Length: 349
View 1 (cartoon, rainbow, N blue to C red):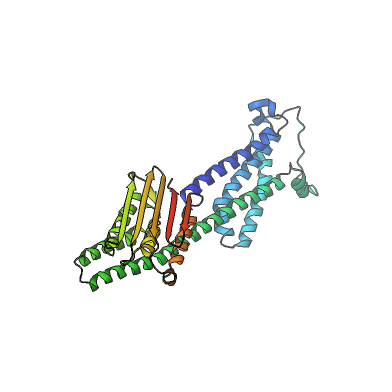
View 2 (cartoon, rainbow, N blue to C red):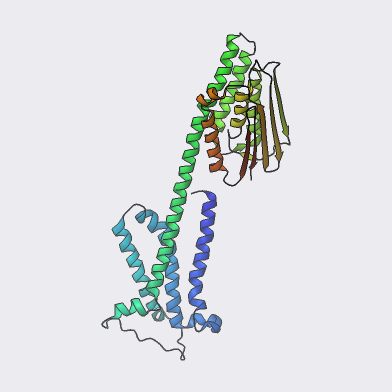
């Protein structure tokens, strides 16, 4: 269970406890007596029942649910709940015998006849409805526990899905980069050793940083710059590249390998040594708002790109955005026969 969920649960539990304990106070016919209210035996009996119900609320959430209910120890769970219910309406009857309380002459005192026929049923149905209130609190505690359990399971599922999507993106990225280096090696380019070194930095980032949920934005930008430098080796005089970064990253955090897919996509579509083409990449950093704009000419065969799984990579990245940044991003794409552009606005707060 993550930190935010734990804090939220503490607030809910605290409010629930205050609500339970306030019911007998504000519903008492002797509420106007102030502090003296706690010296009236009938009120003390009723209030003690609510104190026990409050204790049961926490006992159920932190012990009975995880240790018995969640592990499907049904008989032990049912028996324990029944025992707690019985103690909740039985133990408060001992309060007048403990001393320290003075009876109010104006308040009629109940006559307790424990062994009288039908006593048990009268306790259940007429003792201020304590049993029914106990059942209500048990159901509320059960609902909260089940909800928390479901949220934890959903979070674990989402993180597993994100890791799976990363695993699908990494081999795809490596495959394209190795193809670039292979092309350089065929021409005996002197840039081959440097490109291998850049690839080493790229892979180190992927292996070490992408395992984290968030990384510094400055590291992600450095990764993009290394990638672009490597891609420049494929370009000639027919190709133009413009990379601009406006604003300085500070301590902003971002999900790793979340931006590179759109930049990588521009190089797939926009580089052809035989045709004139242009790629514009702009990144604007304004506190927690990050805007990435990528524009490129389309100078390759679209059908060939479909076979390489380009659309699948874009779909996977979009799914990561949905999981990691729900309601915190916008993605605008303009796709024509000759150009392609996308603008991603990401709230990093």
